[in-house]
Image 1 (cartoon, helix red, strand yellow):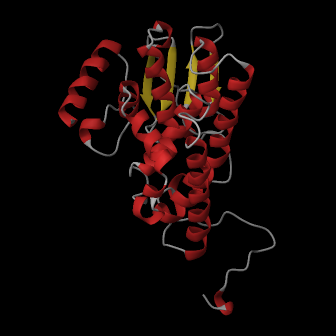
Image 2: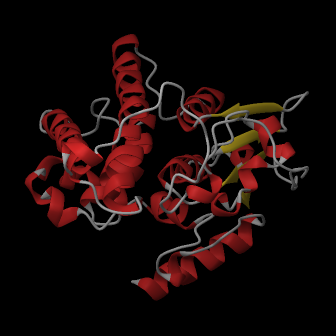
Length: 291
């Protein structure tokens, strides 16, 4: 780009045209609902409104892990929210999450029902509610929360930064791709160094820090995000790969990946989850077929 056609920001930014790229139709500079639509409510204590993106997978993995430990109170209905269609701007969902981002959880086991939004907040809420995946010791708990909040602060640079400009922008631009590829690799190096000294992010135990980070960084190094494995040379991060493969093999993780999923291999999609017994049967059938 020459100096003559370089972009010069106006004194005051105005929303005058779509931003371009895959999500242009749902990007807007204002909050609030665009249409009236109540949220459905099923029969289980927990109602999840989500989609099988990395942030959504965090919560379905957590719920499946809790159920695997025998917590009947963690039974949930998973309702698919198609974010590409703008479902997140319905009035019911905006009431559950004013930020209009998935996932959102409504806990109907308490009166009045409690809304929980932001994926990290949902993981922490469930960990405290059921007493799982969050160590009780002060030092271990603090280290787990360190890495939980590290993920919450770092993933936007991976998804909204690198992923957007590498995979979803209307055309490739060298500067933002280089900028965010550098940051993505720096974050992978942070993880690799930590996982070179510790089995899991919080220490010896599998925790909500791992459940939060794996859908982003684990799936990235396993080749499931942005088709960017070669570009980022993910094989260099051998400790992250070890951790990613270990978590990927967990049965609850396999099940959690399938819920609210609308893309990828058909045998790994179960777009909604309502009946626990039927879900378990269908999930196992599809996992057997995919293996």
